[in-house]
Figure (cartoon, rainbow, N blue to C red):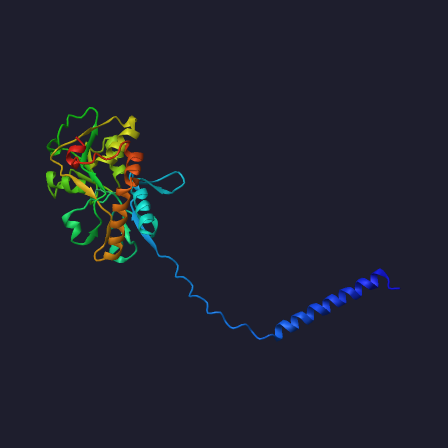
Amino acid sequence: MLSTRRFLQLAGLTAATLMLAACGKKAEAPAPAPVASAPAPAPAKVYVVGTDAAYAPFESQNEKGEIVGFDIEVVQAIAAKAGIQVKFVNTPWEGIFNTLQQGDRDMVVSAVTITAERKQTMDFTDPYFDAQQLIAVKETSKVAKFADLKKLKVGVQTGTTGDEAVTKLLGKTSTNIKRFESTPLALKELESGGVDAVVADNGVVIHYVANNPGGKFKMVSDKEFVPEQYGIALKKGNSELLGKLNQGLAAIKADGTYNQIYTKYFGAPPAAAAPASAASK
Ligand code: ARG
C-alpha cells in the first residue's frame, strides 16, 4: 500500500513530468508564422498652447495651479471638434509671440487682439471675442474720457493694445507711461496710488474691479477706443492647423457650445448682431 505521502510525491513527480513533456512538446512545435503586426499607431500629436495666465477671466491659474478661463474652454471645445489634442503652458506675455516663431508653442490663446501689425508676422484664426479698451481709475478721479489721461501717470501691460493706445495719446517718449509685466500688476499699482489710471481690455478691467471692491475703482469708457477682436495666433503659414481651428470654431458657434461657455463667464450670451463698439457702452 502506498502511503499518502509517497502517493503525493509520485503524483507530484508525474505532474511535473507531464508538465515538462508538455513544455518540450510545445517547444518542438513549429513556431507560429509571425503575424504581420500592424504598425504601432503614432502617438497623437499634442498641440502646445501658450497663454499668459494672469488675465482673468480669459486665462488664469486656480488654487491648484491649473490654467482655467474662457479662452481655455473655447480652445478645448474647438480642439474636441477638430479632433486634436491640446496642452496649455503658462507663458509670459512678453515674448509670447516669439514662441510661435521658435516652434515652442503651436498656438497662442491669450486674449490676443488681431491687429494689422501682428498679422504681418503671424496668422490668426477667425475672431472669437469682441473687446475694447477700458479705463480704470480711483472712485475719486475726475477722469471722464480718454483724453483726460494726457497729463497723468498711466499704467499698461507692456506691448498690449492698451499700451499702444496710451503711447499714441501720451507720446512715444512720455515718462508718464508705466509699463507692467501683467495687467493685474498695473491695477495693483493703481490701487496703491503709483499710477492715476490703467488702460486695459474691458473684460479684464471689469472682472478685476468686481473682484476687488476694496480698491475703490471706477471705470470710464470712451468711444475713441477702436473695437478689437481676439483671435488665436499661429505661426505664419501653419495653414493646416489654422484650417482645423477655424472649422472647430465654426462648429462650436453653430451648435451652441460657444454661447454656453460665453454665458458661463459673462452672464449672458453675446449680443448677436451688435458690433463690439455698441456692446460695451
Ligand atoms: N488684447 C490685448 C492685446 O492683444 C491684451 C492681451 C493681453 N493678454 C494677456 N493674457 N495678458 O494686446
